[in-house]
Image (cartoon, rainbow, N blue to C red; front, top):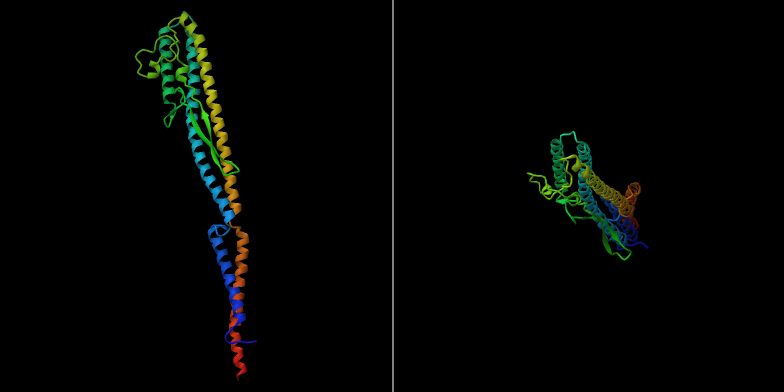
Length: 292
C-alpha cells in the first residue's frame, strides 16, 4: 500500500543514514583524538582500568625522580669516598717515608697535615641537596623505590635505605688536632693518630693508617653497592612504567589502519544511504502519476 502520509521506505533510509552518520562521527573522533576509548561511556570497564594504570604511571614517574635524586646523592658521596681512599694512600706513602731516620720529618708533617685538611674538606663537601653520607652519624636517607598495588587495589610504597658511612667518626683517632685549622672536622681530631714527626711515631702511625684505609675502602664499597642497587631499581621502574604505558595503549588507543579502512567504508555507506533516502523521498511523486 502506498500512502502520501506515511513513507516507510524514507523512514528506513533515514534511520540507516543516521546510523551511518553516527558511526562516521565516532570513527572521525577516534582518528582525530587517537583514542578508541576516550570517555567512560565508550567502554566503562576498560576506561576504569586504563585510568588506574594511568594513575600508577604518574606514581612511577615520581618514583623515577626520587630514585634520580637518591642516585645523585649517593654518587656524590661515593666520589668523595673514593677520593679519600686515594688521599689516604698518598698519606701512606708519606708515613712509610717518615719511618726512616734520615728524612725531613717537618716537611713530611706539613704534607700529611695538608692531606688531612684536604680529606676534611672532601668530607664536608660531599653533600647533595643537604644530605651528606660521609660526615653525618645516623644521616641515612630513605629513597622511594617503587609503588605496589595488590589484588584488592591497595597501594603501598617501597623505600631503599642508604646508610651513612660517617667518615668523620670512622677516621677519628687519638693525638691532637691539626693546629691553626678552622675546619670543624679537623678540629674534631680527624686522623689525629697519624703522626710523622719522628720515625718511631711514623712506625706506630702506619698500623693506624692501615685501619683507616680499610675503613675508607669499606665505606666506599658500601656506597658503591647502594649506588648499583638504586641504578638497577631505576632501570626496573623505567621498564615497568614503559610496559604499563604500552598496556594502556593496547586498551584505549585507536588502531589507525583499522580506523582508516572503516572511515572509507562509512563514507561510501553515507553516500549510498543519502542516495537511498533521496529515492525513498521521491516515491510519493509516483502516486501523482495515478491521477493523471
